[in-house]
Amino acid sequence: MTCCSSSCAAAAQFDPKVAERDLRRYQRHGPDLSTRILLSELRRWPLEGLHLLDVGAGIGVIAVELAGAGLAGVTLADASPAYLEAARRHLASRAAPRPAQFLLGDFAATAASLPNADIVTLDRVVCCYPDVEALLRGAAARARRMVAFTYHPDRWYLHAAVALENSWYRLNQNPFRAFVHSPEGMAAVLESAGFVRAARQATLPWALDVYCRADASVAQLSNGEVSSCYASPATSRPRRYRGASTRRRNFSSNPTRKTPPEREQQTEGMSPRIASRSSAAHPQCFLPEARSAAV
Image: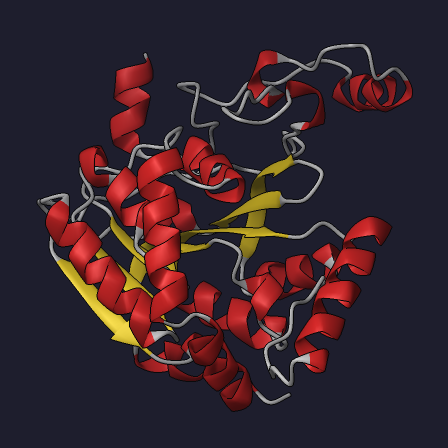
C-alpha cells in the first residue's frame, strides 16, 4: 500500500456518515480515551500564544477542547474531506476565538509545504498510516517545540485485534488498513530529528508519547519569545534525586512503590495503575511564562 493509496483509502473510510457519527458521539460523551490522554498531558504545558498543528484532526476535537488555552492559532490537516467539513462546522458552532486553517491531503506527502507550528499532534494517526517514518519525519520537520502522538502499544493482543480488523477490511474489499508500529522505530525517527522524549502514558489499548525538541532552549516561539526546555512543566526548575538510578531499579522490581511526584500522572478516564511517565533523565520543554507562574 503506497502513501497515496493510503490517503485515498482513509478518505473513503472516513466518509460523511462516519464524520457525523463521530460528531454525535463527541457531543454525547466527550473525547475518546486516547484524546483524553493527549489533552490531559497538553494541559500540563503552557499553551498561550502558541500555534497548534493537528494532523489527522478528524472533527476538530483537540482544537475545540483547547479553545480556552490561549492558542494563537490552529491548523487542522486531514486526508478526509468529510472530516474537515465537519471540523469547520464544529469549530464554528463552538465560536472558537482563534484563527483556524483547514488543510486537505496526505500529510506525509504535503508536510514540506505546510507552515511550521509550535506543537504538532497526531491522535490515532500512526495506527492508520503504513509509512510511519515519513509521517513522523514530516511532523518533526514542522514542529518548533513539541510532537505529541497516540498509538497502539506493541502488544500481542493488539496485533491480534488489528489482524482481525484487517481481515474484515479485506473480506469487504476495503483498501483501508490498521497498523501496530514499533515504538522503538518511532522513537528513532524523532530522536534522529533532534527530539527527546518528555512524557509517556499508557493504557491497555493506547499509549501517548510527547517529544520535545532538544534545542528548544534557543527556539523562537511563534509570539517572538525565546523558550527554555530544561525543566518539568510542573516545576519551576529541574529537580535532581540522589540515587536516581537505584530508585528506578527499585520501582521496576517493586510495582507497589509510588514514583516521585514529578513522574506521577493521573489521567481522567484511565486507571492510575497503568499510567506511566518517561524517565526524568530527559530534558522537558518548559516555557518562561510557566516558570514565573510556578514560582
